[in-house]
Amino acid sequence: MKQVLVACGAGIATSTVVNNAIEELAKENGIKVDLKQIRIAEVSTYEDTADLLVTTAMTKKEYSFPVINARTFLTGIGVEDTKKQILEELLK
Amino acid sequence: MSEFRFNEEVILMNLEAADYTEVLQQMGENLVKHHYVKDSFIPAIIEREQEFATGLPTAGVSVAIPHTDAVHVNQKTISIATLKNPVDFVIMGEVSETTPVQIVFMLAMDEPHSQLELLQDLMKIFQEGTFLDQLLQTDSVLELKKQVTEKLNLSDFKGGERL
Image 1: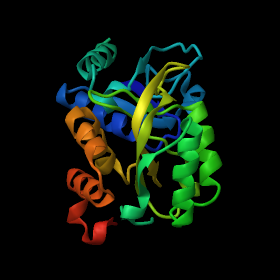
Image 2 (image 1 turned 180 degrees about the horizontal axis):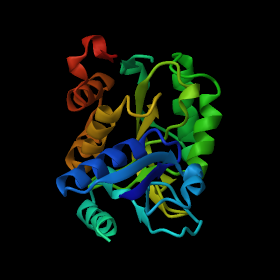
Image 3 (image 1 turned 90 degrees about the vertical axis):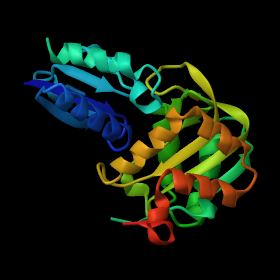
Image 4 (image 1 turned 45 degrees about the vertical axis):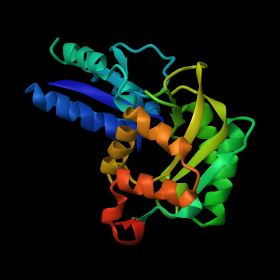
């Protein structure tokens, strides 16, 4: 099972919405994921276990796993592309 | 957990501000005045915006959703300000790219998960560009309150409060 980090600055508002959207996306596609809703500052804690980071916050840091920008889940603009990117990573 | 309350006093129309810090300062002061948040909310929300920007270009006018940690909040609400002139906010997830924001939704929230539905409904508003345009055209606080209350399904809750 892939571990997906869902992070925003505070870990309370936007990550809640994105977390739920990914949960539904995975369910619709019959994929089991280990979702962790966290603050962006906590990402390094999961450095060794995470497969993907989906975030609404800015990250300058380089990680060993791919990072996908999740702003489209909030604005709806380009959300289908973002979902496709996430699915591709989950199915790898 | 505090109740959610959405009243006229959290709506500011045609707010005038030179930059986003002034927008957050004025909206924050208003929330402090009506006891929704603690004094510490103001510096906290400004600092959070500097670190993690919340500007969102939408299908219609650009919006911003500034928010900060629950510890500064007494009473949950969403404060709304329409801006007299657009104010640049850095776009969420970007380093320096900005968007001219015309409506600000300041979230005073507590625990994660407790507000999923409300936040999802709010994002739905952003995805319908026309509703934001309609909000900007609105000329009275009561009318704006009515429109948002209907859109966010707040009317199901007695007195605009939601447990």
